[in-house]
Image (cartoon, rainbow, N blue to C red; front, top):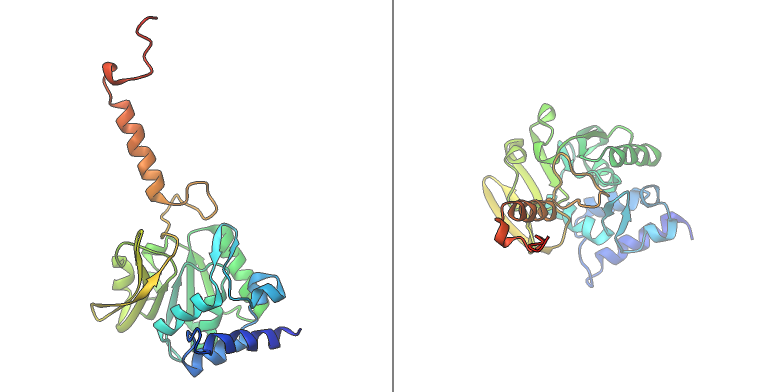
Amino acid sequence: MEPVVLRDDMVDSLEHEAKGVVRSDRLSVAMRAVPRHEFVGDVRGAYADTAHERLGTRVLAPSTAARLLEALDAEPGDSVLVVGAGVGYTAAVLAEIVGEANVHAVDITRRVVLEARGNLADAGYGGVLVDRRDGADGLPEYAPFDRILLEAAAVSPPDALVDQLADSGRLVMPVGSNQQTLTAVEGGDETALGSVAFAPLLVEGEQAGAIERNRTAREDREFAEREAESRRGWERDWIDWDG
């Protein structure tokens, strides 16, 4: 089956009341235009509503991407920052809405940045800027942004990203750790938009695909090691008192 047919079927299903995640004409037109198979690889699998893993990063299911993009509510001409470029698909959809020169994306993992650049170029969106950055720092040299989309979870909105919003700008991100809520930050107010589950925002020194990509797990291990090292002799179960 031709990709364009599969793409239309995908968007039709996302518009159907059973899912209802694509509600605006802008997003419908944009998702019908972007060749998602250029970002996923498998033509048929690209248009199934499932998530994928690639290069240690999660490729969002189309319904999840649609949910984020509807919450972001970008308009033509808006300046947009995507934090967590991934394979570049959401940046491409935004490029259809706001214009590719207005879309900027960052990711902390170098090989993911290279992958996103290649995918965007192959799909016809080579004008989207993709740079390697710590996502929590944003992209201050291109600020302010009308819209910022953070595709990773944090316990609170990063200060740098909030500071890089235009006066009437909007930040959309998952907020929380174990329990996360999709949240829109606008004018200092936070609006909850339902439950989600995303990987945590990585910081410098952590890379997608690493054995320990979650800094919480890493910190727990480090605390346990420090506690073990601080024990006095009588507390150490490994001492051979008879030796």
